[in-house]
Image 1 (spheres, rainbow, N blue to C red):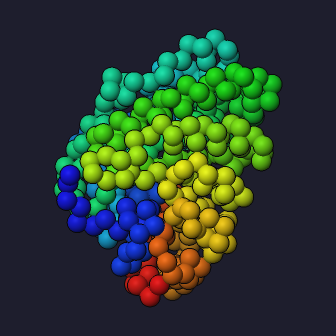
Image 2 (image 1 turned 30 degrees about the horizontal axis):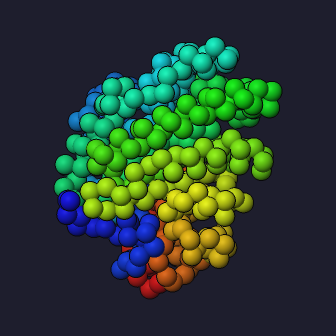
Amino acid sequence: MSDLKNDRFLKALMRQPVDRTPVWMMRQAGRYLPEYRAVRSQAGDFMSLCKNTELACEVTLQPLERYEMDAAILFSDILTIPDAMGLGLYFETGEGPKFRKPVRTAADIEGLQVINTASDLAYVTDAVSMIRRELNGRVPLIGFSGSPWTLATYMIEGQSSRDFARAKTMLYTQPELMHQLLDKLALSVIDYLNAQIRAGAQAVQIFDTWGGALSHAAYAEFSLAYMQKIVAGLIRHYDGRDVPVILFTKGGGQWLEAMADTGCQALGLDWSTDIAAAKRRVGDRVALQGNMDPAVLRADAATIEHQVDAILAGFGGGPGHVFNLGHGITPDIDPDNVKVFIDAVHKFSKKY
Ligand code: 1CP
């Protein structure tokens, strides 16, 4: 078992007491950092960066060099799984992800193979092992995956979408076909996250970025059910420690009780949910992670500090809070404002 010098993050996820609230940021390694942009242009394009073990490790560590964060997150992407399934992922400059071969028909879905991480995605587990070595116990490493529903939206649409027209058409007109796709994705995610855990990931987060676009009933049937299946299939104890699972459904504020019922350890909250209300609803069962609006980082230092303090006060005393943004940091943010944010969490959280 490796010595962890800072285990505040893992303790808070397990709802154990800590000296101050741990903090990390979704998308903490990314385009707002000039040193990230430099390494990315060295790599050529985004997927080459993900597939280059040394460079992926380097950008994972970049935010930790600048800020006192309590966790690192693997630098990779959720779309590595559909890429490994043969859909041909590419990124056009200035645009989001695209697939050369989206899945649209029953034959497309029948032809998909559940991934085998060891043979198809070794570059991801290689990066996890190298990052763990380089971190040398400084902070824990988070592994991650997309939720089956979120991955399915990209695979069916072939790119980002506003309304998920094709994915929802399949969901309502060929629900059994959608279930077949989600089943293959859930099995793939289980294999992928367990491989990350064996390679050294000390906690895992499932990003259900588009679960909030579903109706109440469709969320339970087409997103939550598969995340529950994943939670049930994950390694929960490894290398002498519990491996906490964080579920993050963006726009999922109304489903917190059901999400907590999956057996995960923590729920990621976006900024539309009041963290005090969330704590009253589920705070004795799961830890809560979040939830400052990333847009606050465009404001002045006093405003950032005020917003941080309001969220800390909302959560109040007691264990089980990991500070984060309510979604990923955007590329336009001034890195100095991130320092104000991280320092404010440190400064104010001691009083709770
Ligand atoms: O350099 C670049 O231009 C690429 C931008 C970028 C980055 C920095 C992409 C493309 N992915 C990433 C890294 C990434 N993606 C991480 C790294 C770890 C971190 O520092 O947090 C993580 C966890 C992700 C996860 C991810 N990718 C999600 C889920 C999280 C979320 O933000 O909701 C999603 C939806 C994606 C797809 C994706 N990949 C990249 C982009 C721009 C997108 C979003 C496209 C869209 O908005 O539909």
